[in-house]
Length: 339
Image (cartoon, helix red, strand yellow):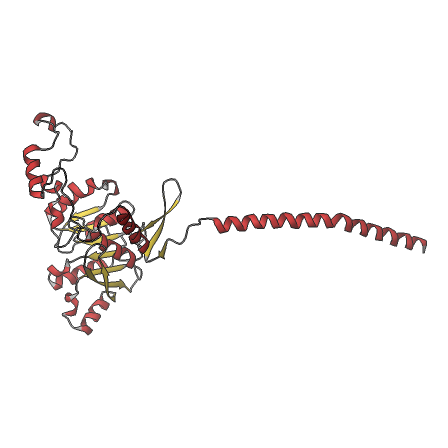
């Protein structure tokens, strides 16, 4: 009995000692854990973590991008309401007139024709004479007609409308930087410049038949905008021949702005048949501006049937408004439904 009693007493004493030792440790551990959890929760709540690749904020498409330093940036594709209010406030704060603003002329106001004549006659305020001019002072000599941007007036509407088209198409197709884009009839790159600037190098393709437009694109627009390093693939060609773009290319977006209006219907269908196999199934988009008379002239049912025979499905009509002038444009969308 004495042994049992002693054992019991010893066990009880040990248990009591164990409790005395453990409680402070548990308290300290719990306190330490609470501090760690607080720090972690604060860090997570204040962290500017990258969002998904494309999100919508205040009607503006935002794309996450990583620069050369590995820092995640957010670049807006479309103009938000906050952007518009910001510039309006800046105009007002500087005492500028919002309406009926007549700008004063510059120090040497010249029309484009007058600028061109000045270039021909005087070359520039400071310029090299004939012998020196040939010795690599000008790396990429550009014709005066392009330098005064006469080609910006060839579209029947302001040059700024190119940005409107880019924003609409990029948003409608949820375009990412690593996408592949083909423009059928890119002209002088009124729209294409914005895609080239946004996309990764070598990701913008263009088929254009007009030599003068191509000269403006290659000898003026790309160099003057600092976009030569983007290496867009621009091909002179017609009859909707896309073989020079490669057999394994897969486009996220193919678009034609006011081009199919000037083509025979059957040539448009030939082009669609050739390009549909280069379009990514289901996610890839084709957009055609203004109208699709090449299709509707067949009649509603036959139009749908012929599209289906190519593996295309109509996505209907959409419109978008210009940011800077009273204008809206109509676009018809299609997607590839066969893999």
